[in-house]
Image (cartoon, rainbow, N blue to C red; front, side, top):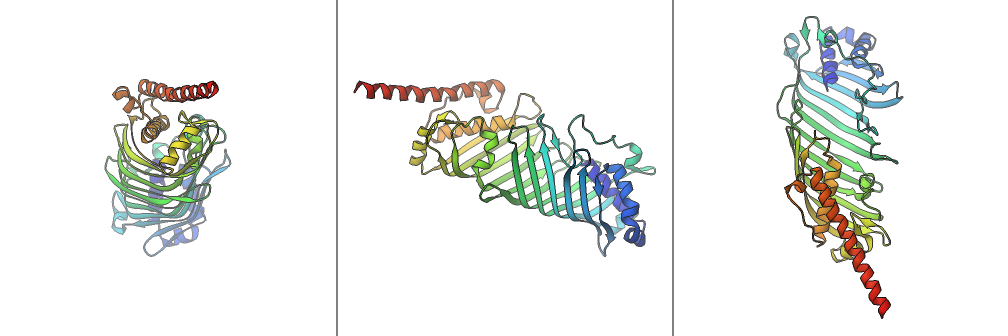
Length: 382
C-alpha cells in the first residue's frame, strides 16, 4: 500500500511539469524514476494528460526473478484537484483502475505474494530510502477521496493447503474505497465490492460493504455470497471429508468485525442441493451413508449458524480451522445430532476448546460405528 501512494505522488508531482513533457516524453522520463521506487518489472505504455485527468495506459508488473506477472491494467486514471497541485497535501478526487487483473499466491509457508509483496527472505530489492520517498525537502503526502476498480479480476493460488493447491478466480469485480490518506491515518474508509466467483460449472455472486481502517486494519463489514459451488472449497475441507461431495451450492451471510487484531464474525450458512456420494467415508466425522439418509429427510438443504471468534495474531489461532470446526458443529446440530459444547473456550476457538470439540465430534463417528456393528450382530442372530 505504501508504494502505491508513493507512485501516485510521483505521477502527480511530475504532472506539474507540463503538458508537453508528459505527452511526448512521459514514458522515457517517468518510467526509470518509478522503477527506482517500485522495483524492476514495472512497464508502462503511455502517459498522457487529458482534460480532467492523467491517463496511464498499459500498466504491467512482473516479478523478474519469479518470472510471474502479478498485475496488468488497461488504464489508470488519476483525477487531481487542480488547486491542490499548488499546495500540500496532493489531493486526488478519484483514482480509477480499468480492467485490472491481479495474481496473488500464498506460499507453503503461509506468506502472501503479489504485486510488490514477497515472501520473507525473498525481497526483490532494498527498502525504500527516505530520499526516494521524498520530493526535495518534503514528504509526499496524498489525500484520495475515492479509489475505484472497474471490471477487475483476481486469480489466487493457495499452496499452503497442499497439492494440488486451491485456485480461486474472481471476475467482473467492481470495488470502491473512499477517504484515504498517506502517510496512513486511522480513519473509517467506506468500502464496497461486487463481483462473481468462478466455480467448476457455474459462477456465484459475492458482495461486501462496510468500512476498513487502513492503518490498524480494523473493519466492520457485511459479506454476502450466493450460489457458490461447495466443491470450489474442496482443498480446504478435504482433510476432514473422506467421502465425496458430488454437488451443492453455498449461500452465506456474515457480519465481520475486526478490532485490535480480534475477529468476531457471526453468520449463517445455507447449503442447497447438497448431495453426498453413497459409499464409504465420512463428512466431518459423520458416516456418508448416515448423512445421505439425513439429507434426504431435509430435502438436501441445510441451514446452519456459525460464530467465529479469535485473536488473529495468536499463532495457535487458525481462521480456517476455527471456521471448519464451526461448520462441523452447525452441520451436526442442523441434522439433529447432539453436540455437547464444553465451555466458552470452544466458542472462542482456542486450541484447548477446539481439541475438546474435535474429540466430541470424532466420538460421533464411533457412535455410528457401534450402532452399525450392533445392527449386523442382530442380523446374524436371525
